[in-house]
Length: 406
Image (tube, rainbow, N blue to C red; front, side):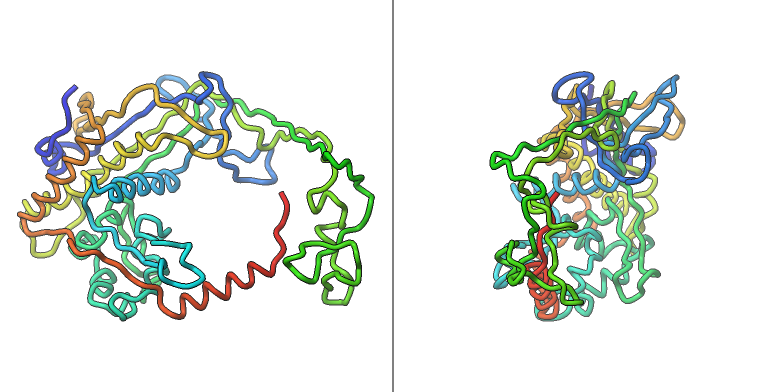
């Protein structure tokens, strides 16, 4: 199997292929037939999982969604962030820096790869660039005006938004803000899913009886709860507020919990899992860069595609620990397929961490030589005073509210 090269990628992007595709087969960490726990959704249905019938090859299989398109995009972004932080991948990553802000410094740096709406997120909108609200800065105005028909500014300052998609719904144009199509689409599904059950119980070492006393919410949030009605927080009508629904010890995590069987979210067994990732080169070819030559546009699109290749390679090395009790292990190393528009057999190519980093470096250098460059300077914003005040007030409210038990 050949290794992916810059020339191979450039030819694919310029029209030689419709997409790059990666299909990864995975198994639960405890082996074939092991139980995994998908994300939960519905709360009133027979179970809480996204189950559907899909055609797999020449048969129809019952499948369960293990990781959605949106979740996979977030994981890919974190993989790119890891490579960027390690200094192995070089591309613009704007961020809002909270590290010097008293009381919220625990937030650290929130990058364009962390923010839910990427560079169009309200976190960036409500931050300052060199003392100016971001949207009013030259960079912010350029980002606001960027369109698929002229993506030069977005490419310069936040190229990952062109790969993972972005809708500028928080900008001055609201719902009419620019939309960039998602070019990177990935999901993980489990095949031949069988819905399971799980059991639960709790034995209290103190053996506190469920009707031993009534616990009230304490008027001092730091105290949590009290048995003395005089110290209890009061409801609007002046009645002492019980801890939880009825004030039983179990509401404050004391006492036994009777054994139970959960048939709604008891996990699933599967024959295997499949991660399918597609980088749409057709979508990238719709991106235009005003005033640029055709060769420069191809070079810019190739750099974006190289980011997607790096996301696949680095994501593989970050493992597939999707959530508690859902760790999957690949059955093989990652490989890409060039999917051509004539329906011919896809051409497989190898990719790993080193080759992906090299590919990205070469692609960005070619784009720069063609006149479409990534921003070299650090793009660091600071939260605006109004955002900091909102944060602090929100944390004050959170500190006053009681913590609900599971």
